[in-house]
Length: 345
Image (cartoon, rainbow, N blue to C red; front, side):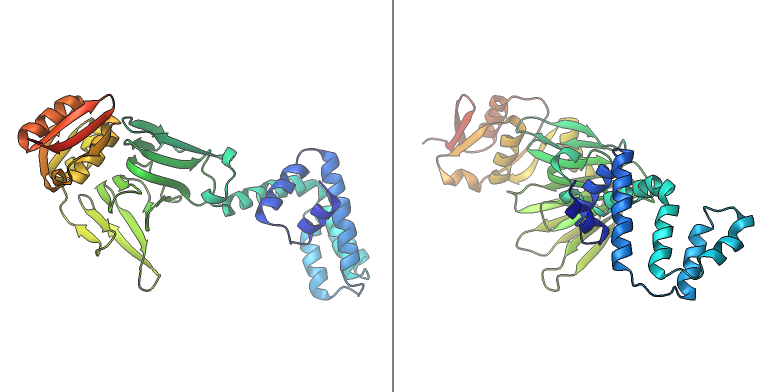
C-alpha cells in the first residue's frame, strides 16, 4: 500500500472500494497497523492548527482518554494536558486508541460492507446462477431462503448477506420461499421497472427480458412491490396480500388481480406446463424454455391460434401431436428444431 493511498484514506478522500482495500491491508499485520498509525499521527500534527486547546476540545479529549486511564488518575491526567495545543491533544488521543484500532477497523470494515450494494460488489464476492432452456433448478441463499428457478432464468446474490438488507437480482421466473427476518428485509431487483421488498414469505416473480409483461403473485405473507412512475419518476408502492397478482405490461397500465389462480402461477415448480387459451407466440416461448427447442415459423398464420392443454412429462413430440390435433397447425422436427406451418401446406 503506497503512502499516497494511505494519506488519501486518512484525509477522507478515498472511495468506498479504496477504503475497504486499505482496511484489509491494515488488518493483515501489526507492522501495517503501526505504519498507518504513525502516518496518521504525522498527518494530524501537520494539519491541525497550533493553537491552544479550547474547553470543548479538552472535554472531548477527556471522554476518550478516560476510557484508557484509571478513574483515580483521571483528574491529575487532565490537568497535565490542559496547556497542550489542539494538535498535541489529538496526537495524544491517537496513541491512546492504538490498542483499540483493530476492533475499530473491523467495525468500520463492516460499515463499508453495508454501504456497498450488490451491483458494486466484485465478482468474487457474489454468485450468479443460470438455468438454460430445458433446465429448472433450486438455489439455497446464504440465509437459507430457497429459490426455485424456471428455465432460462438467472439469479445473482452475495456470498453472504451483510447489513440492513438482503439484496438479490432476478431475471426470468422464480419461486421464492424467503426466510423470515423482519429486521433485515430482502430486496429483489428485476430486470424490469420494479423491485420487491420482502420480510419472509412465498411468492413467484416472472420477469423475462424478452416478454411483453412481467408478473408477481403472492402465495403467503405480505410483499411490497416498488416501481418507478413513468410520469413523476417517484416510487409507487403497492402492498400485496395472499392470492393477489400484479401484472406489469410494457404498453399498458399495471393491473392488480385480487383473486389470482396461484396454482397456475406455481405449476411449473411442480413440473406442470399449463396453457389456458394461450396465444401461440406465448406457447412457443414457453415450449422453447421448457424443452430447450428452437421454433421456426414457416407460415405466420399459425401465430393467430390459441392453445389450451396441460402437460407434465410429455416429450416435445407428444406436445406437438396434441397441438396438431387441437388446431390447424402442423409441424416437422429436425433434431432440436421445430418448424410450424398450417395443415395442408
